[in-house]
Image (cartoon, rainbow, N blue to C red; front, side, top):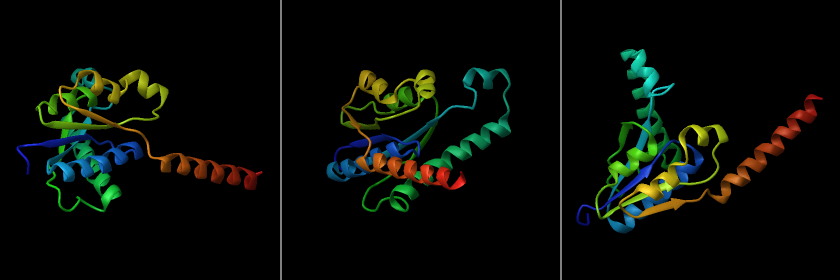
Length: 169
């Protein structure tokens, strides 16, 4: 490993984040760095609502679901953890952008985030994680655009939906 270098990557399990995860693994290999995949989560309904009516069993269930989502992202992307890269997975409670920039705080860190489409409501409620990271990170940031495969998959799914509608009529 080269002098404590780390590649931190935001992971949610979405196709865009899996593309960023692949890029982060490539960067970690090339830099001989530790890969730190981060899945940040908040309680359903937000922290304020949870503080108003805490439910420890529900909180534990959300934590377990977040752990499983991070493991599933690696299974979906690589069939498990990648070979030849030291991985230190991290599941944290908090908003994604602030948590990623807080974790990626060393001079030789590299932060990898996905960009691309997200729903208008999600953007309104949470903002753009990649924009937040680009504006607030103290280390270099790689913003990974969606793979062209994503648009191909959407197009195929749309065609299948149209065929199903025509058969139902």
